[in-house]
Image (cartoon, rainbow, N blue to C red):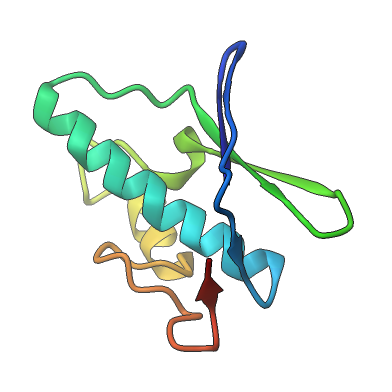
Length: 105
């Protein structure tokens, strides 16, 4: 997954193989959440970057950091509950695709 932040571009030279784009997106969401949690420890969270997933056919899927997390001050809100109910990746980073033949190289 390549990372973009404004005009900055960091290319992922190793890459990873996934069965589906959804599996790759789920992995991107987990990675973003890990990065955001590390940023939170510094006191500054930048949600402007995004990951770019490039398929074998050259197609591109963007996963913005801002769409991988929800910042809520009141966890009793309807949006929070709906997000939890509809998430393919839970708050612990467990993906619905876990264990389905994903490989990395």
